[in-house]
Amino acid sequence: MAAGLDLLGGQMMGRFWGSDKSAEAADWRGRATTLQQRLNQAEESTLFKQAEFDANDMVLKLALDALRKADPSSPLLDKVNRDTMRRRHIAGVLGAKGYQVDIATGRVLSRPR
View (cartoon, rainbow, N blue to C red):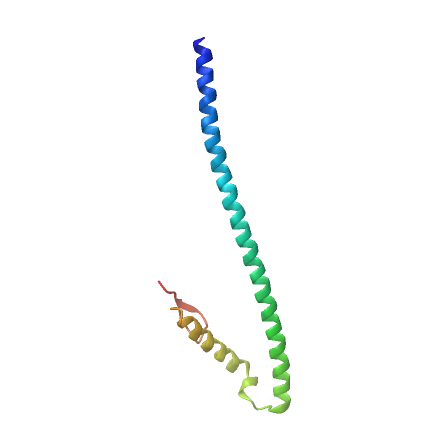
């Protein structure tokens, strides 16, 4: 009879710990679902940004073709000049957010703390 009581006690403890583990597992499943949703949103955002980048690149090529015909001596036709202008603009935008960017290389030198 004592063994039966131990068994009953063991079943009760198993139910107690099992329910706790079940709740913990459900919590982690919820977290995983949330992270998956955030990852999906980030991937979609990246896809849209890439599509926008590709569209801007296409428009730039058309504009450069038109500029080449209208003013072949324009400094904007020089890729080095355009890249420097881009890096300056990026450095300014990121600088306003606390980043420091090397304009010559485009590398981030420091991040905000």
